[in-house]
Length: 607
Ligand SMILES: Nc1ncnc2c1ncn2[C@@H]1O[C@H](COP(=O)(O)OP(=O)(O)OP(=O)(O)O)[C@@H](O)[C@H]1O
Figure 1: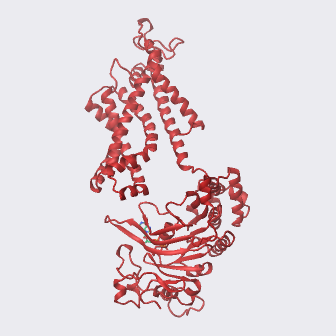
Figure 2: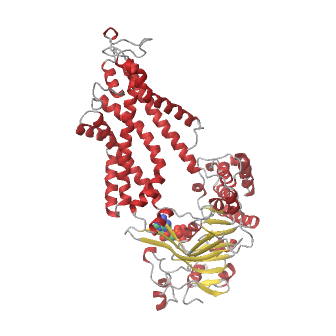
Figure 3: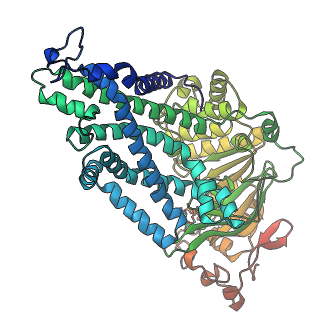
């Protein structure tokens, strides 16, 4: 972890050093003064000799508070360690046990977390009896469910990572996966939370000792001193104030340390270092001779189904996108267009699972492609420009981040480039707009800003998922023109998802028609308009109204409904709605094969 350079880090380091010094030196320096009684000095008010007064036997309150630091802090740390150890054990169990027992343990953890911690501590303190041991056990056990829940959540968040899947594939057992792959990857957030938890344990200790369930005389910690001070609060309030202050300051120290650790860990994980020299070489746009920007073979996207199995909405998609080419993806709602596009951009979130025989971007396996390559050469434009921009960050900053992280530009240079890109996407007064937050821009401007973000690098592929659906018709036209211009200027290929065939045929060279989670026809726009071969594409075209459509007749519709991904028929998914379907269509799934030239069709009875 890096040296504390922020004010928060510096404050945390100083406070922790001071507390540590008191833990070590407190009893050595002030131990004698804390034990020295003197009948004549009984119940003295604050004075120069005794800044917080004296107790019933004339001992100096300040010396006792400073001496009690060691016991108070050590007991809190011990209880926290116990809570973390038990929490780790309990939270890791669901990963080691089978699905059924794992669920049972997870449910038990949830119930324990919902139970108030201090009540639990009181219960355990009474079970184990008053005293230091009982209090450590009580606070440790009461804190364990929170850490168990944290461990369980963190373990689940790394469980879907590829390196865990790879370990499973080569037969590594669950326990070994837990210790070698899961725990090392969740250690940092656990340490941060344990540090903050120690502050809570300190307070809980003070509470138990104050209630007489913690440290017993002649021993004393801050809680006991607080208890004694409160007995004579009307005579000498400072005697209660001193241990109270000590608890607050030490608690704050733990919290500060936790916050500083969290900030350092956050910085480390959020900030991707600028590409190193070899990475930059890899990130350089691929040579123009390269034939394919995106190569997809046998792409499958699956999600866990409620019955415990998997449902596969995208099932065997094959296509290529060549440099500078604009490829449209059309199909009814639910045909798998967006999932295909998101899988190609590496954006399918867990628990979704992406499998493919080949999924390559600029010749790199998408899984292993350098992050800087994706950051500079792949741009994604989403349907809703409001949710794709961070509402808390200024627009210019968001665009600049791409150049800062992936191109190693300084903050100032990156911001200048952001303004330049906003100008390139025809946003008027880009300097002012760059300083604004997304909510201050119109929907069309936000979408242009998103395209501008994609143009911060040298995009070789722009994946646009229904980028104009949320916009009105005039703004829609401007955004389409902008995409076409980005394609012409930057030479970027476009994968354009839309349910609107008219829009697709205006922008694209080629069209992929999707049905039931797969590509059923891959054809040029000219071929699409002159006469496609797949009955589904024909039906889709017939359902689009155009200027020559006879208004006296009802619009053509495709009878029936698209198949549910969980209950797709074994043969052609379109067969139940197809007027050309025969027996073979019901049993054998037609592969996507060359129909003529570059035209491909997946149909046994293509025209
Ligand atoms: N996270 C998910 N979990 C489970 N199923 C999902 C998930 N995301 C999408 N699906 C299912 O996958 C299928 C295809 O979804 P997708 O969003 O790719 O369709 P689409 O063709 O883009 O449709 P639309 O035009 O309505 O966006 C749908 O049946 C959808 O319900």
